[in-house]
Image (cartoon, rainbow over all chains, first blue to last red; front, side):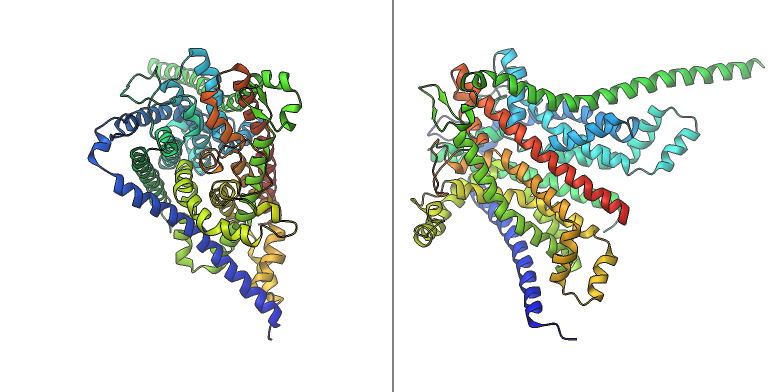
Length: 280
Length: 325
């Protein structure tokens, strides 16, 4: 039975559109990555990792920014990951089917997409204002607040995937609930939970808005968490918005390193997830 | 005899310490869960508290006043609110059809082997930090718009009857149109991921029935898949809207930080998040700072409402799929 031409044409048009939409999406990805690669590779020099951020008009590196970012991400991870895993455990295990867990799960999903700049202002209000100055500690805390909802969500999902037989087997052996969770469920869901934490690290590594009003920036080397601290995203922001060519070059170099780091983590997570699930 | 008693004692002792540890573990995890609630509530309350001075001083005029005059201490939020809404609208106009197209391509058209890699590539769009979008937008995309797209737009559409004012003005590259397009690219992966997931979850018998009745694939999409997944697609659009409204860095780079209200999409403007990012560390008076926090409060409340709607719609489709499949 022949399909009328009008319907056939609609079909072809729709499919051409869908293919073009996909090409359109991929086009931007490659354009952005290509720009970052081309501009960033040209700006990569050894001094990037050995020198401090320079004053306007002279060359330098981003060592203090890399260090500051590293420290704040690590500290954010140390604060955020345990809280996130514990809350995710409550949602999937200890508070399963309770009203509190349902509400928290709902709110957590909303926090996942909430504007990070508001989280930055929140930390400004409660930490920076109370202490009276910007600090690396406030920056780390802001990053932790961004990390928590991500870890909560992935931990909850990972624990839900553990079959109930495992829990029943644990209880049948007379194990108390906390040991079932910590010795059986965490072990079974370990790689999935770690994957979620890695994804969270990738996300907070690129966060700029929450650091603007918490860690601020610091032109000089500073390992003091109680003082303003340099970090890669804010340096990129300030340098890219400046009128100086040397600063633009450094901003591209920082952008390249940041993008490479974030994409590496994302791809690593996907490879790990594929290995863990054992199919596809 | 003694041995069994001792064993019994040890066992009950174990059980007791187990029960105490259980309670402790339960308490810790529950406290962590409550922390998530505190985070949201605390952020909302502290924004309301920090913005109270602006709300008290300006009242409802805060959201209707166009003037953002720092020396005169006059702060009206209409321009940033307008800029936020317009750029988000442009973003959705671009992202919604493209995302649905991508989802369709990935569920029905692409060769099976290529679906995974293409889906990952689209997801990577969401992984790129927003500051990278901003830099690329400022140094590459805005000049491109200024050279190739905007002269054409103002030349061909600038004098058109109704939409003319939207496209008039000098082609400077930085402005609401550029910001909206960048935002659109950024929300594509979020909408596409949800759309793809629900397209895949449409029960096969429904599609097969349509095939048996002689439907083309386009008719299956438009008459079976889309109606069936409608609430989830709308949920995905709200999710994208929530992301677009609150996006900060990318918009800050390409919007121009201008507190002028203009009809033209080619003109620089401001958005709530961009105004906060640009001006907060320079805010030297209490009223200035409070006005920016009041802006953040408005943004937070609106995105929370939008995201709540998104979540409710997405929950609905989950229940529907749970029942039927």
